[in-house]
Length: 391
Image 1: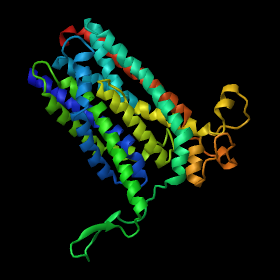
Image 2: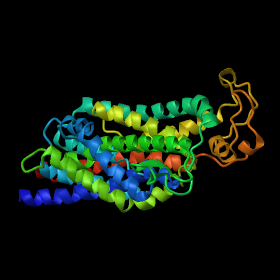
Image 3: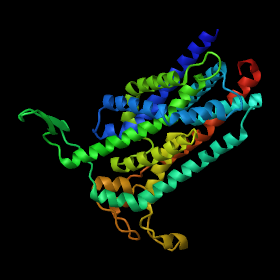
Image 4: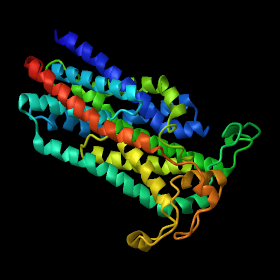
């Protein structure tokens, strides 16, 4: 019987990890693939490695919280399998609505539902987690505002991310010892910016592994007949990698299409900021959604760049006639123009440009952050109340 439950759990874990890989790989590598810096296959391979690295190291702290911190009893194998079912259901609902899955939040909600049904919920831990869910989007928003208002325009004036035709590197066979050299159309600037883009992508993949591997692995760890932690991490990583090599190929093409038409340089700022927030919280054992920090940083950068025509004094007093252009970053990048100094009006081209993000999409994303964990909590509570023997 235990073997059967474990087999069902492994299948459920693979399903969850597969869908995580599809969504997180697209978010992590979509901008780089779209810019032609890496191929989809290369992106999936790098993603798999760094997801494993993040899950094997920092992700263990999150696994401890999920398996032991939220409830005051050990998570049994049968209860873990049921929780994986609710995570999968949350993924399905999010896919129906066409938004990235708040997997970490859905996982916490399902485990909290178990704790409520059995009277074992650790209220102090769950309160700390929820408080970080409130702080994280605010933090991502305001860091994004500072970047968009003060840092991005200065970097955008000096840095151009180039992509030339042909291979980035070639092999010089005319030398005594064949050695790598720049490709026929590659410049040192292009090589340097490409390396930076890839490093930031690896960092975000690491962050995704730290926050997402525990969601697919933790429910299978502990209890009689459960998997060893190391084995569970490997299973979850392989499932995420499989999703990266398959369904993520489509998401890498379409990522950002609904939410934002963000330039690659701005996307790198978003990736670095969201990854840092997510990794830091994962390090202290807080299950957090990488998507949450990513979305709000995009909004923050757009708003920060848009408010440059308004000085701090004008913002406080309300004494300004300057028009705010939320699509300033997009138009800036497309036109190759420098941003005017703070306090000066934007050009007509910027004011007439496309919006950076779709407000309707933002509302839908934020709604899912509330609906996802709430639904999983209620469903898990009802299930474990009606079938107490599973817990």
